[in-house]
Length: 251
Image (cartoon, rainbow, N blue to C red; front, side):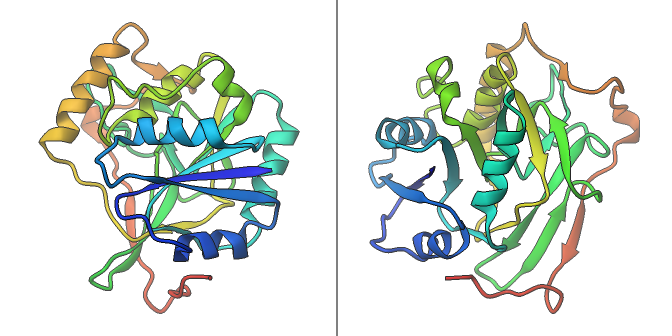
């Protein structure tokens, strides 16, 4: 079974997200919404969800995140079953993290992998394509917009809710721990859209510095032989999806 864990600042009974998951998962699952109205950080909220979860795979997603394709749960279960050492699956991530740059996209192409669709409140509908290829790619970290974790990993590691007590860098911190005991991958077989965007403000920068300090003895980290060249940085591509992909949320 899959346990979907999310945190909403304003909890909604029978949310569109819950209905979307019910329609698209394709496997036995449970939906756990943590009440974030008290300002709890995501790491702490997700730790609360873990304590309640009963699944073999835990899926962590933010509020207003929806699945665009059917049977994503079947896809997850098969990938974890096929690779006993696979611990974390994401839809966007990187094969290289710097020791002095805390953004996971800092390495640029071809080191960043995956894609995320954004459907914003102003009507914008686009995909950030980190890499053009389809399929699975090994990475060292995934973005917290979607993170599927083998439940057994939490016997040895956990979300650091003391250091990362807001909504930033809990995901990269967890991946640094997961790298010590498992493999991590990004897949394009699962397609999600998010009705929000990341905010890169002073708080984000502050927690980025905390991340670098905590893992200074392990960074840089890579799962490939090549090394990024900062002088030849290649950014991800932004693709307008209006008229090219279904905009309606499955629910």
